[in-house]
Amino acid sequence: MKAKWITLCIAVILIGFFITMTVKQLSTPHELNTNELEVKIKDIYNAEVQTLVKEKDQFIASFNKDGSIFEVNVNAVTGQFSDLKLIHKNEKKQDEQNNSEVSKEDQTSTSKPVEKATKPVLSEQQVVDIALKEVPGEVDSVEFEGNAEGGVYFVEIEQEDDVIVQVHAITGEIIVIQYDD
Image (tube, rainbow, N blue to C red; front, side):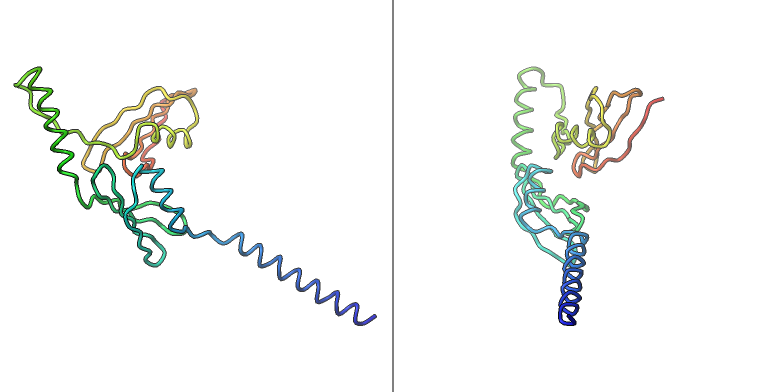
């Protein structure tokens, strides 16, 4: 009889231990691995990852986007992107674009100067998806304004009141949500 109680107590303790370990494992944040991070970078930036280096609790990833090389820091636990830097700009592609723009302008008019437009890293559709995750509704318009930091998309969403969501064109971070009264 005493052996049954001892066996039952040991079984309850072991079951409690395994339940505690399972809950602890499920509640601790999952750290990104390199494969998950590569997929995330391909999805967000539509780019090919060149290198991934893990330092402490973050990854430093460099990737190739349209011949230009960028570097971004990614928190290994949260997956938050930060500090996007342009490492090497693809001058050849830019020169080809400028030459094609010049030749098109030569055909129409020779008096207009060529303007370099800031090209966003994120596509318009990616930005719309980001904005709709934050503010549900129907997209009315999307505008892009280039600047030294890479540019900003202005996504106008129709709800009861119009909402304008400003999204950073490189990081995809929502800068401002403006509600019209």
